[in-house]
Image (cartoon, rainbow, N blue to C red; front, side):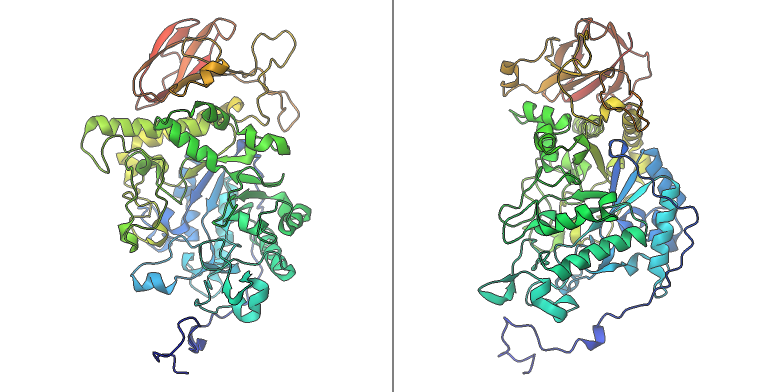
Amino acid sequence: MDPESDSADPGTPPMVDSLGSTMTSVVINPFFDWGYDRAPVTPYNETVIYEAHVKGMTQTHPGIPEQLRGTYAGLAHPMIIDHLKSLNVTALELMPVHQFLHDSRLLDLGLRNYWGYNTFGFFAPHNQYASNRHPGGAVAEFKSMVRSLHEADIEVILDVVYNHTAEGNHLGPTINFRGIDNAAYYRLVDSDLRLYKDYTGTGNSLNARHPHVLQLIMDSLRYWVLEMHVDGFRFDLAATLARELHDVDRLSAFFDLVQQDPVVSQVKLIAEPWDVGEGGYQVGNFPGLWTEWNGKYRDTVRDYWRGEPATLGEFASRLTGSSDLYEATGRRPSASINFVTAHDGFTLNDLVSYNEKHNEANGEANRDGESHNRSWNCGVEGPTDDPDIAALRRRQMRNFWATLMLSQGTPMILHGDEIGRTQGGNNNVYCQDSELSWMDWTLVDKNSDLLTFARKVTTLRKNHPVFRRRRFFEGEPIRSGDEVRDIAWLTPDGREMTHEDWGKSFHQYVAVFLNGDAITAPNARGERVVDDSFLLCFNAHDEPVEFLTPHGSYAQEWTVELDTNDPAGLKEVGDRVLNAGEQFSLPARSLLVLRKTL
């Protein structure tokens, strides 16, 4: 058949010889001098995750040699490591580094697969991220990056895509699995075996029910831990891996294999707990070893700070570790990977600057990307010279930063949110390998106040275990004779919240007392943990609210530790002191943190 003929069946793959573009293999020298490398093994309750893109993180950094920008070696540069350490980051979560393709549709539009969720080589680090362009050079460079990050006590977590491959739908390219055993590697439509079940939105779904596919996935995971020394994995669209027949099954074979594996079961396992198929939203339903991107945390915190009514009760649940999602299965607050922004969606700056997505540059007439972003532009869509709106946006970013870092659970930061990175309202930059997506390091100076605030609030979390408890609050006094519970929710007038108070849909303000003397879980050495006690005062209303500090059984004296209404954010200790029962005004859309000093 002439592949160029008009009579060619558009429903069948083109009969074109692909020999000239076929991928070839490279035999890798396994020797690498790891020196004294050891995994940091940071406990979850001390973990702060930073999600980053290998190229985007370093492509424009002026302090990194040009030949190293956009590479594994660039990520290992001391300037990047120092930046991460200044934010108290303990784990670097890398967007896909398995070898991936730039699909032809994007290339025809002059675009590229920037994010990398189009993988086909589960054992190969993406070679375009290597400054060493010799065959196999990417492997040694990746290992060097891991070694350098480990020396700084930073773990490396890989975003892995085992739910689909770059071969696409039935019209996509034949690269490897389709040509080896199409019916074994992919889920096919029963009524037409040419077609693929698509739970991923990419054209195909890998068949994680098949023994050989499961073996491939497990071999790949073990390889990256044992050979490349990575410390964990974030599983893209993990609900797809749990589908036995059609439904998501938390007892699926994949989870059984992970649970019993002596290597994979010992590293950090993070699920993106959804896919695009029916019943795919599975937040809170993964097995005990797993942590989850908590999409309910993201949605609730966004809704609260943009002033949505009837959010206060759920906001309280998310702030305290989402026990409604994780406690019943024996998991702890750390099972909740808390985030406000991630690669998929608005940046933090755009979250407070745009009501609508602006994805025209993607070539799909703005149809792609999420339309319901739970964002608020503070009064004007996009950039503005209005000083009041600009100040409100910066305050909102500080509110999100403080809420994230003072919540129970495991926080995750999107790269660039600490310096106000913007994507111009584009919430789906998967195809934008350009300045639109790359970190703009000039913002370090322009938005130095935000960076200072981010560093200080992450330090506040690091220094105080009451913000990162290993167990859920009990809502009761911990020891006999104690007057005060481990947590107490208070109205602005200083009394404890009642059921009626929680039911008032218009309430957008609350205070919460965190008792640092009532932490039940010991530390890693078995010692009792004692911390300062704090009062967190939230006001998401558009008007100031008068608060009273609670009566003396909570504290006789409080010192202001954090104030999102102040551009510097953190007051000097002793700068402002409040006594028990003292009234103070909490400005609109702001958060105040008080520390018990007497």
